[in-house]
Length: 317
Image (cartoon, rainbow, N blue to C red; front, side, top):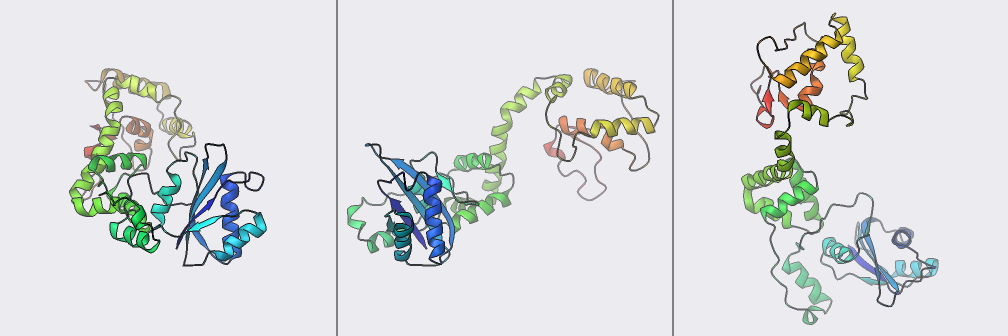
């Protein structure tokens, strides 16, 4: 069940902010024994300087609004208007967010984005006919479908890296009535979806890759100076690495000079570094930062899929 609630010509002594209005509505529904699944609230300013609020709420099941309206008036002193004409939560959400840059949403609110509406003409027409508004509105326009470019923009904005993540977003939006992404996934096929994700990140990373390609290895290494450690390091790598070298009777200064020499001059006779030792002695660990920085593929696994991931990396060791 979806309601759009409007508080016109708001009295700022009774309701001073979006947060204030949203809490008044939420607590009134709670007092009436109704559970709100999610909500979105906006504030709009009239030309005369007055303000009004809209809030769209989605309930866990159909509930009448009369008691909530009475609670808002009796407990908070505000008189609101209820509307149930929206075909689903997404259309109500879109109405609320269209003009307010500071829109407020409930914790854990679904990511509905800001692309064109995805409600079906049939469901919208039924709601308009039931509310007596069909004749007062212009004929419904054919909505624009999502293009591969639209999806690629969405992928980067939401940091989506896999098809499964995109499908999960499409399903979540579909439950709220926004079906354009789900339609794209179903109608365009698996290959198109995979290409949209891949090309999205190629476009996003192209400029930085081009700039990186112009730098020497020492310059690339220097660009990481001052950046935060990778998760789990806690600033301890250097201490542990020096301990490994000391345990193996390798002077830290000698090892550092050898690594710098290879980075500056590249591999060559008498310059290659060969690290040997028993299992779990720190061979991989000692070069782990360089492996991350230079995107090196090393130590293929001894399985049927030993080279999985190698195609995405820059070089081999």
